[in-house]
Amino acid sequence: MLPFARRPPGAAPPARPARQGHNLFEAAAVYVAACAEDDQGRAEEAANRVSPGALSFGVNELACRALITLARERNEPPLAVARSLLGLRDESA
View 1 (cartoon, rainbow, N blue to C red):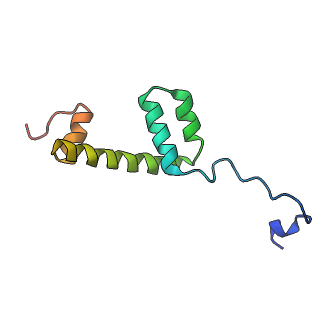
View 2: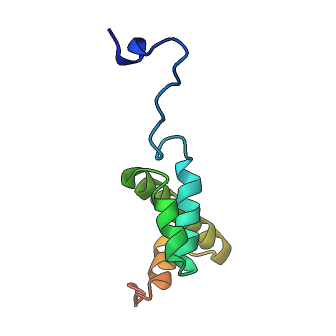
View 3: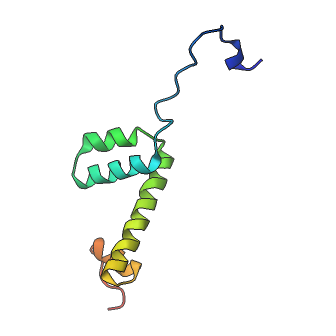
């Protein structure tokens, strides 16, 4: 018999873990914005909304989208923009 089938009639279903049900992209957006604003409490709260793997995926997706947007605005290749944002030398020089 499945575990959920053993509950007495009318019993409330078990609570889902806190990490389920949160949008990973929302958590990533809040996490990155909080980090940019040096708000450690808000960053930790956002990080606790989803699994570490999901947060990593969301942060990576946000970084890619932001880089593409900045590259288009600057009319530069994404690698050049990424290197500039990180304070790295232009590798073509």
